[in-house]
Length: 222
Image (tube, rainbow, N blue to C red):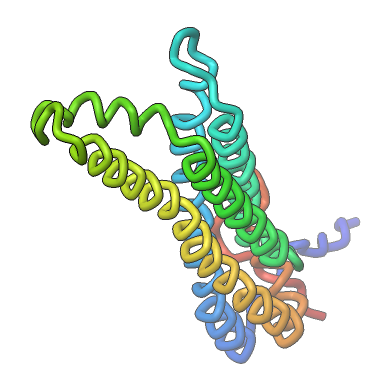
């Protein structure tokens, strides 16, 4: 007696219409891949500059600054959030761009607050850097001249204002623009998840899971 034929568990090939639909969805997916690359670049930059800012504060004899330590550690945490965001953008997680937008807004607010704090310190009590610059440039601007020291102080104070103010401007412009970018991508992601068939979303999400194949999976058809 012959054995009954075994049913094949192999998924049926996609129809021509499904292939077209999948191709169009993959084209739309590229905008999120670009956003993921932007999040990766932000993560790398924040982690590098965060480490360069925070680590010297804990080196003996280098001089400790609480505000610089907070800035460095905050950038490291924000960089980790951006890395998390990159992974979840590729997996099409709803709400990921909203979290990245919040991360950028908080980071920018931190830059602005610390920038304002540094400028306030210069305005209220001066700064050791002003005295150091006065000591270096004094002989070249006329030692003993009555207004030479005052001119150097004014120049040094202006330089400090520009330098510290640029930190706040950086946070306002760069982090503000990134927050706007993420807010727009959040709307696009919501529209994409709403308009794209569920079977395509599942394929694209599974492809980004750890250990999953990178070739498109074919769904079962009845």
